[in-house]
Every structure is written in structure tokens, then in C-alpha cells.
Image 1 (tube, rainbow, N blue to C red):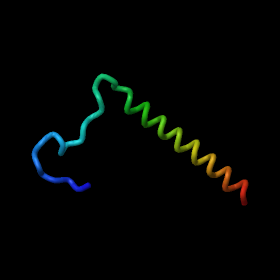
Image 2 (tube, rainbow, N blue to C red):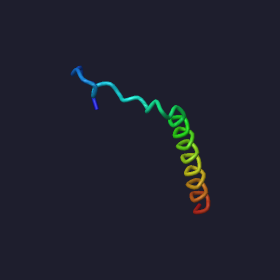
Image 3 (cartoon, rainbow, N blue to C red):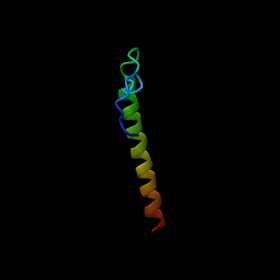
Length: 50
């Protein structure tokens, strides 16, 4: 997706909703934890099959 100079609200990225200030942080932490858990599970599967 390349950035174009067309005027309008669609050009700039939409910010997170202001009525939930902690949603972005919670989602970021949850994603990080999920990725870490998946990495550990994948590593365990790889080690057990070796």
C-alpha cells in the first residue's frame, strides 16, 4: 500500500478510539504473550520430533 497525496480523511491512519486509552497497550501485551506462547509450543514440537 503506497502513500498517495490525495486529500481526505482516508490518507491518514485512524487513531485508536479515545474512549478506551488502555486498549492499544492491552492488545500489544496480549499479542506479545500469544506470540511467545506459540513460539514455546512450536519449539517444544520441533524438539520432541528431533
